[in-house]
Image (cartoon, rainbow, N blue to C red; front, top):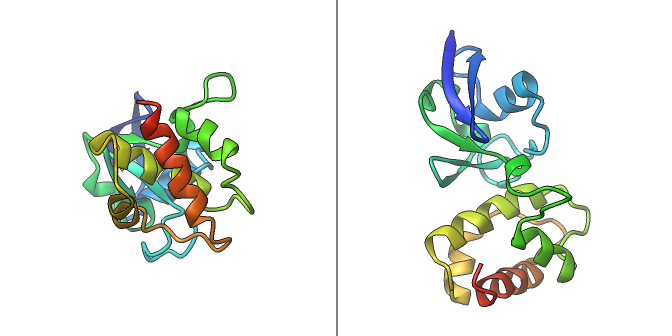
Length: 152
């Protein structure tokens, strides 16, 4: 089946079954491997992407449900030459340890700041439900506050 959508601002057509998880369509069909597989049950958040601006766990989103929608992956958040303010803050606050969960963490943080530009600690804790096995949660919170304080 052909499913049309926008991925990182470009029109794409997925040629997969409707029930294929978006995660696998992104990785296998488009080669966008920044979105990681973690648990496969939408619990860890390593696979987080934006669908029409809302953070979603792509391992549990069937491709058939995203027809006509806009998907943003970590590859479109920023680049080495023009990093997103969150990526700069992540490095400045030494958030990444093993790094595996970081693309999902960044996508969740970007979605939070898009809707809540100056979040409280409670709002950050409520929005950042992704699991970090390295337990850098205090650094994640500091990095989000740094970006919010910079007015980004």
